[in-house]
Amino acid sequence: MKNKKVIHFISLSIIIIPIFLVYYFLNYKESIWKDPGFHYYYVILSSSIAVAVSWVAFKEYKKTRSKRIFLISLGFHGVGVLYTFHAFITPGKSLFTFSDIQTHIKAFIFFGDSSRLWIALMLFSPEILKGKDDKKNYSSKVLLVSGLILILFSVIVSLNPEILPNAKTSDGKDTVYSILFKVVTLILLGITALKYFYSYKIKPNLSVLSLLIGVLLIMETVVTFMISKPWGSVWWLAHNLFLLSYISMGSGILYSLLTNKKFEYFDVLGKMEEYVKNLKVTNKELNILANIDLLTDLPNRSFFMNILKKYIAKSKKENNTFAVLFMDLDGFKKINDTYGHDTGDKVLKLAAKRIKGSIKKEDIVARLGGDEFIAILRNIERGFVSKAADRILSAVNNPMNIDGNICDISVSIGISLFPYDGTNISELMRKSDKAMYRVKKKSKNNYTFYSESSTPSTV
Image (tube, rainbow, N blue to C red; front, side, top):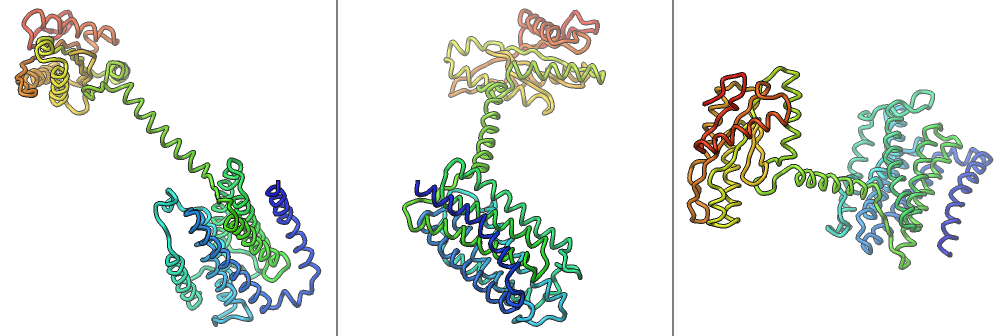
């Protein structure tokens, strides 16, 4: 109950304080808030608060080992540096000299916008830094090194502002570059706000709520800067909204640090992505189970039938010819009875490998069941079918050494041709099967074409 009151108080404050600030800046003497010194010290104070929030977040990270909290600490650490340089080059009270006012203004605007883009990137949590929280611990050295890099970067930009594109037009409006800069920031913040919102719906947590409110306040800040002109009352409102975002986030993290309430963030979008990825993997595995013969790793009967159906449709359209080879191993039952099913399975696997190696990679061979195999040879003439059948016979007929047992097998092959022997699945399967049994009955270890075809068929 007490937590709900705190939440309501913070939420109400976020609505009321900006309204109060608007009233204040519209009625306060312009001579105060248009003074460069006022901006200079105001932003220095804001930067100091950002650094304080960074320190609190780092302490909370040491407690929870939450990588997201560390990124927030890194984010406010960067804001402390970039926003301080925004103060350092305040027009009328700058620590750096510039060739002209236009160059000065674009550097001035750049550091303000960069501070918000930096915190947006850290709150967004780049994919490269995602992972389980406690896999790697970050020390304060990371903050120190990143701070030094940002300081060096800021000094270089301040001394060479000509490298920056113009941020404002002559009448004080944002340029296309400046608008694009802010839009990218808004997109990152918008995605982050969604993440925090969904997290809070699943795991209501004061710290997460404060972060959500803080993100929304930064979004308000960016939009307010887009519609304002420097030194106006709306422009100052944007500064205050930015400061309020620190206070909101810092308060929530401090609350988590000083109490036994643990920061709990549930990455709904990330989990959904993980579930979808797992579902794809599961579907792939199920597809393999549904379409692959697990013993030989060849396509199974069901998969073969679907492929044959597609071949028939394509061949009718393109006026092509293909062959169906129905194969049955000779002497397999004797091996199974003599040496057992384990040896029999190894014979089937080796036979499958030999058959597959005897045909082209683009052709299909499948296991129908037991010791029966079937193949499709595409776009070939009768003579090439005979050569492929000869290769299969030669490969399978080589003795197999299975665990020290010499297993002699051969294969009988029946062949039907599309479209001569049939134009549908049942005809092609039936006639190739019939041709195979004719080989079995006559001599085995041979092949023949279906004899009732309108094309000469016997071998």
